[in-house]
Amino acid sequence: MAPLLVLANDAAGGLDADVRDAVLVTLRAGAEVDTASPDGPDELDAVLAAHPHHRPVAVGGDGTLHLLVAALHARGEL
Image (cartoon, rainbow, N blue to C red; front, side, top):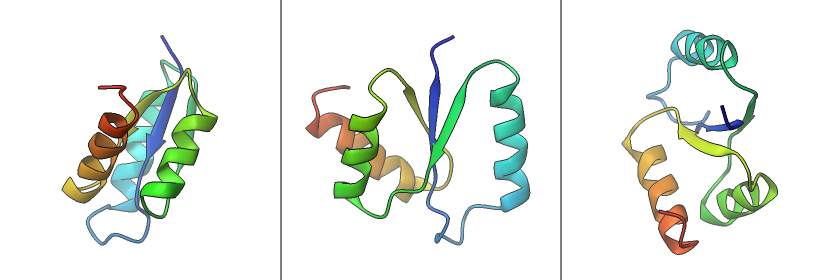
């Protein structure tokens, strides 16, 4: 499996730490996993550029997912 880049907004109130940790344990059982908590679109773009061979995974609410989809669209990677 391709390495994964788990993206979360730790400042958002919708992400439960126990749930996030359980998700990471599950993902790490089958893949190499890096994590990032980018603060906005510019930082997200830099994180994606630094991990070109990782598949992004949004862990959080709809704001995190929207930010990721918008960044991938802007990069021509959807």
